[in-house]
Length: 144
Image 1 (cartoon, helix red, strand yellow):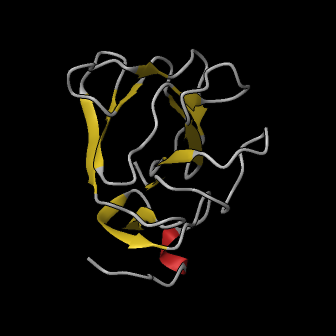
Image 2: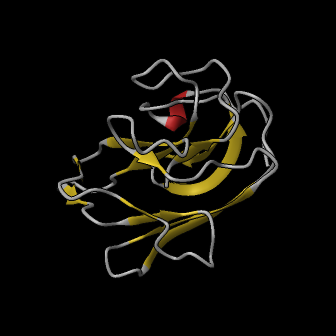
């Protein structure tokens, strides 16, 4: 998990023009990673809440965005949950339900994101969003 936004009111729209919550994954490796059937969940009681579809891959040093909007009828990756702007946790699990990453998202204001200072590693900070871009290149709006 590289970056999340829980109160996207006008930063970036999905393919249907909707401003939804989103989760950005980043591949730190030099190999394509197959994320088929990997899981995102915002609820520890439901360990396999949203499974990525078969054939979902992330390219080397690439980004993958999942819209957290509870709208699986839309084209693309749309999780069956939203992210609470008052804060919550998100877990990324592999297809065998092993935790790969877990973050505790703090309360965020409209159009702020919670991003790693360095893509794919390091601590998270509240910042201006950098969807599909290198997090290091942005000025941080709020430091933890």
